[in-house]
Image 1 (tube, one colour):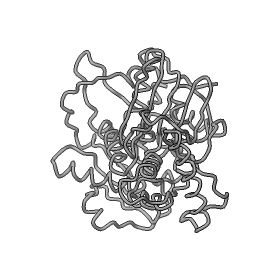
Image 2 (cartoon, helix red, strand yellow; image 1 turned 180 degrees about the vertical axis):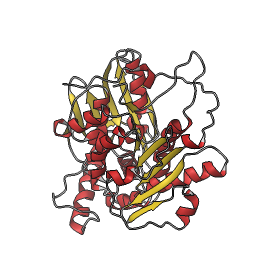
Image 3 (cartoon, rainbow, N blue to C red; image 1 turned 180 degrees about the horizontal axis):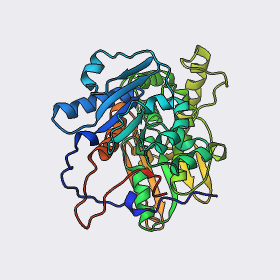
Image 4 (cartoon, rainbow, N blue to C red; image 1 turned 90 degrees about the horizontal axis):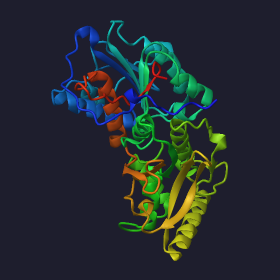
Length: 395
C-alpha cells in the first residue's frame, strides 16, 4: 500500500519567525555522535568549530566513529583539536555500542549524524529512532533502499529522521515538496539535474574554462575537489541519481524501488569496470562522451543527465539533449536544478537551483538540521514552526 505523501502542516509550513532559543540546563544538553569523519564529516567538524569560536550555542560532540575505531569523550570533543590530531581507539562497534555513547540524562536531545557511505548503517536507523535518538543523515541508502525498511523507519520510535541533504545538499528540495503537499497542493512531476557531480563534469566537458580535458581526466579532477561519490562509478552508472529520484518519489507518495526506475548510465562501460580506470575503459568513456557531445552541439543543444519523476509515468533517468537556452543547460557547473510541477505550478513550474555537490554545502545542510534539534526554538505566537524531518509520531 503506498505511503501517503507528507501532509502534516507541523512538518512543513513556512515562513517561520523565531524568538531566541531557550537556554538549556545541563541535563538537557544536546549530545551527538558523528559517524564518518570523511570529506563531508570533516567539513561539518570545521563548521561546528567555527560556531564554537564565535561563541554560539552548539551541541556537545561526544563521539566520532570511523572505520578504524572510536573517539569518545563524555565531556565533549573539541572539533578543531580533533581535526588537528585525529585519533580513535580500535573498537568493534554495533548499533547498541553507538547508542550507549550518550549520557542517560533525561530531557536531553541525542543525535547520530551519518556522514558515511556505509550501507549497513541504514539497518540501524529504526533501532536508534526507537530509542529516542534523532538521526541526521546525508546518506541516501535508507531513503532509497528496501521499501519495507523505509516504511518501518518512517513509522518507528520517538526519534526523528532528518534527511534534507540527501537530495540537493543544502537546497530546500524535500522541505519545499512537503510545504506544497501540506498546504493541499498535488505534485504532478519533479524533473531536473539531481547530480551536482555530473552537472559539473558535463558542463566542464562541453564548455571548458581552460585547457580542455578528457572526460576521464575531469572525473579525477572532480574527485580531488570532493565533488563525486567516493567511487565515481556511482555517479557514472546513474545509481546516485536513481537513489535521489527514489527519495523524491517516495516523498510525494510513490511506493517505488530502484528496479522500477528506467535509467541509462552516462556511458556504457564494461561490467567489470573499476576506478581508477584502466587505459581501455578510460578510452571507451572518452570516446562515447566526445561523440555524444559533438552530436548535441551539431543540433545546437547540450547534454545533461536528467531525472524525470512522474506520479503517472514513473521514473526515467539518462542523458538528454536540451536546448542551449534551457535552465538545465544554462545552470552553473555543480548546480542542481529541480523543476516541480503541481496543480498550482502547472504551466509555470517552481524551480529550485543552486550548488548540489561538495563537502561544505552538504555539511552546512547537516548543520542546519542539527541546530534545529539543538535549539528547540519557540515560534512567535500565531506562526507555525518549521519541522523538516520525518517524525514517527506524526506519521
